[in-house]
Image (cartoon, rainbow, N blue to C red; front, side, top):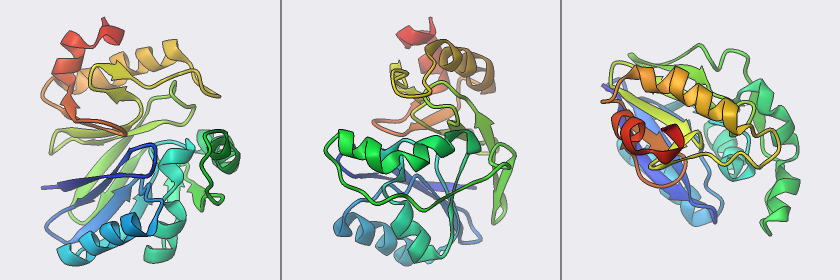
Amino acid sequence: MIHLCKFTFNPVGVNAYVLWDETKEAIIIDPACSIGREEEQLSRFISDQGVEVVGLYNTHGHFDHLMGNNFASAKWKLKCKIHPDDLPLVVDAKQHALMFGIHMPSPDTAVDLLLTEIIYFGNSSLKGIHVPGHSPGSVAFYAEADKFLVVGDILFEGSVGRTDLPGGDHNQLISGIKSKLLPLGDEVIVYSGHGNETNLGKERRYNPFLQ
């Protein structure tokens, strides 16, 4: 069984997720921490749980989700992996952050062609599902056995990811959500990159963007 803990970090309020199972192997999705207090909170949680971080992953390449990459990469001696289609966003992340008045270093990030296959840690696995539209390389991570998704900014409670940023495509995003995520089942819990968790049944029935 996968355990999940959510943290909300940085000025943009990004949800960072730590996932682990009974083997005490863990992964972090979108580390996102931007100041010392947040870095300490994340590292203390990892230490207190007694888990070993064996993987770092980004749901997509927008700067706010990359803000913890350098800390996490240095702390756990791993590269944060991202879908290759979002490499241009990684390259430009520092400049994009400045447009919002936020200073950050260039993120330490490695593209991974296998990100949309299966990620293994401990006795658990996540399937990467490529759902472009919010960004070209947006990926949702699906825990089939535990019936949840970590979706980044693809889907929110009552909303979907914005598509007015570079590489965005609203029709592509809606099509991907309907064809790749909703068929996974109404009971699947959705953990988003900002805000509260929801489930696919609620979004299928009530999300105005999916009607």
